[in-house]
Image (cartoon, rainbow, N blue to C red; front, side, top):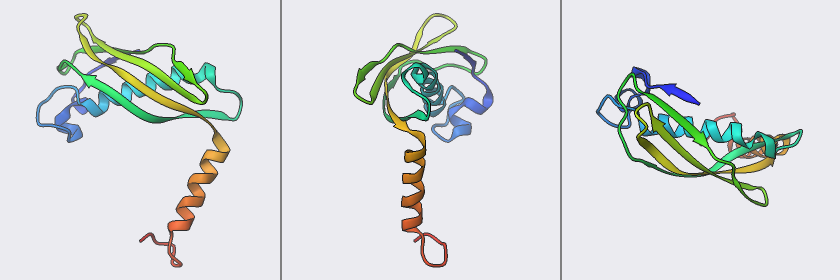
Length: 130
């Protein structure tokens, strides 16, 4: 998938730095979105994947207006864990980032009910959180 770096994608706007180039958090979000798409064939009805670990090296700055192609290769599978090799390449063919992103296959309803149960357990009697 290709993305064009805009002003809203910069480190300055995202608060991750003070230069107007592609922010690492935005790049990671693009890479993670690629893994979500690539994980679809590994889930059944009622399942989804959730991110569990990110190991990414941001190697090269990308200016506003640059096009960056992100991709996730087929994963290695270890039970419910999927490990995707990921990379980003700019419009000049230079490697922008490389790494791995892990996702876990989960039952969507069970996952969401677990999150709700933990949130309810931490709320006070008046509905506020400590």
